[in-house]
Image (cartoon, rainbow, N blue to C red; front, side, top):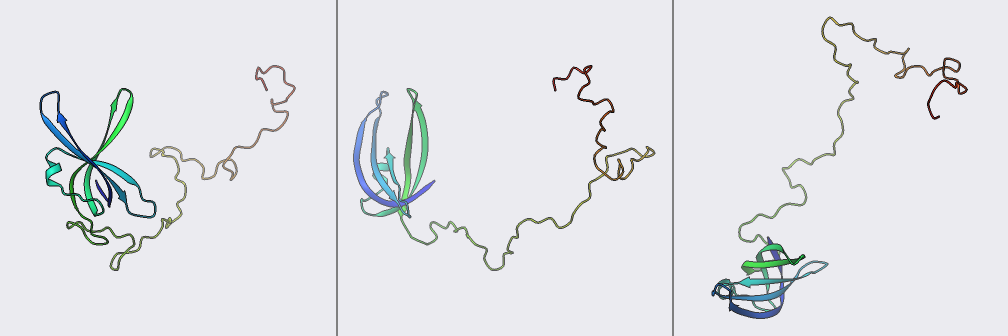
Length: 165
């Protein structure tokens, strides 16, 4: 992942010896991103990269970083580790990566929103050959069967049914 911005703070170098007896060192910085709503990002340069990555406060950089979260004692911590940096180049192509166009360019067809080209009639259910075919429009041209008529066994005063309504 890459982050672009200006270095606003150098938090200094820390070093020590691990439990295994290995020497370690790290340097932390704060970068402020560009844009309408700038964000501050604290990142770390760890190990031998402290000597090879040259970062100066007040300069703008494009940083290549890894972002990783880990859990310790039921709390989560996020690390932003820088493994490469280069001076920021505004509005240009950096390191040979092409910029993605945001609008169609000449030679590319303009995509139109989806609109069905044709109206389809509903298909009849499958029936094997030789089986009788259903009528084209059952129930006299309506999709639904006729409503029951009062007095045909659906009287509200019928006490023989066990329905609660």
